[in-house]
Each structure stands twice: as structure tokens, then as C-alpha cells.
Length: 117
Image (cartoon, rainbow, N blue to C red; front, side, top):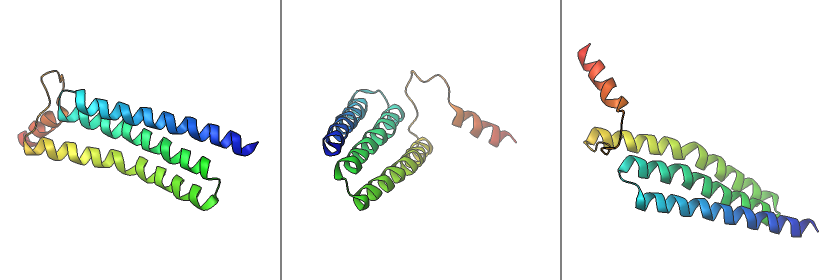
């Protein structure tokens, strides 16, 4: 009984994680510039990967595997935003600027303020 519930819950989480990962892949292909692509990949990819790891934890019914999966989720949720921020900042400094639909450029404003003082 508990095993059947765990399998159904794990399968649902796995499908939901796959959908988020698919949305991240579609975002990387369809979005106009580097920064929006990176946003899609980091946000939806982290959620999708986290849901897949939680599904592994639920389906395994083993405390050691579940603990490793939970640690993996924590690691993904902590490192993905930091990595995306560093890559975006390095891309901006290297000269890759946002697309024409971008309304506000905070980094440019901050650099102009620092050079003026």
C-alpha cells in the first residue's frame, strides 16, 4: 500500500520535473538573448532537476539514497543562481549586452555612477 503510493507520487514528481526541464530547454532555444536564456535555464532547470531528485528520494524508499538526493537538491538550489549570476556578469563585462527589448540596465547605471565619483 505505502509502496504503491510512493510509486505514484514519485512518478508524478518525475513527470513534473521532466516538464520543467522541457520548459527550460524550450526557453533556451526560443528566447531572444543570452540573459533571458540563462534565466530560463537556471530557474526552470533547477526546479526540474530538484523535482527529479525528490522523485528519486521518494521512489527509492532507502534512507541513504533519499539523503543523497535531498543533499543534491540543496546543492542545486544553492549553486545554480550563483553560477547564473556570475556567468551573466562575466558576459556583460566581456561586452555582450542585452537585447533591444530590455528596458533597464542596472549594471551600466552602476558603472557610470562609480566612474563619475
